[in-house]
Amino acid sequence: MAQPTAQPVDALLRRSDIDGLEPIRHVHQHNANAIRLTRSLSSLTGLETLGVHLVSLTQGRFSTEYHRHHEDEEFIYILSGCGLARIGAHQHDVAPGDFMGFNTRAEAHSLYNPHPEDLVYLMGGTRSPIDICDYPDLDLRQFRVHGDRTAVQRKHLTGANPSTDLVDPIPEFEQKPNE
Image (tube, one colour):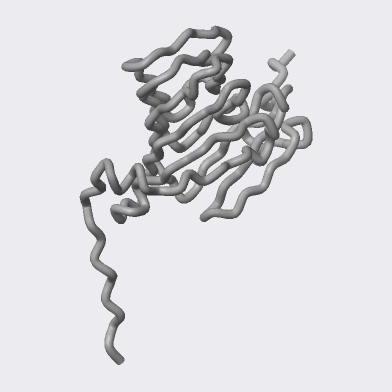
């Protein structure tokens, strides 16, 4: 039986190709006000482990729920418009030319557009087969395993490493000195 051959993929997307893409409306699963209009670029060029998207945020919308990844890395490069980036405990004004990079276990982050002009940015990141994502404002931890997502309130998580998860470890056996 013959092996199927992969379809050839063009490595080049011209501006006219990108402009012709219909933006897809994404609503974040944990924040109904996190709505972004996305043109996915990476899949069209055959990239499998890296996601790259051209994103627009309209006024009053968040990019995502405030979050941090354990395994995936992300970046945001502002192309036009202005917004507010929440990174850790701080808010930052962002404008065209600003770049944000979040390595694994970076501080939690999100983006917000308070302005009438659309906030347009290039967003990208790794697509690890397995990732853990924390949503601190919701006290939620989400697990993604090969595309399937499960979320649980952090208060319901318990440690699974008996030798390291003990709050008050059992002291080593102590011999009493001979009297």
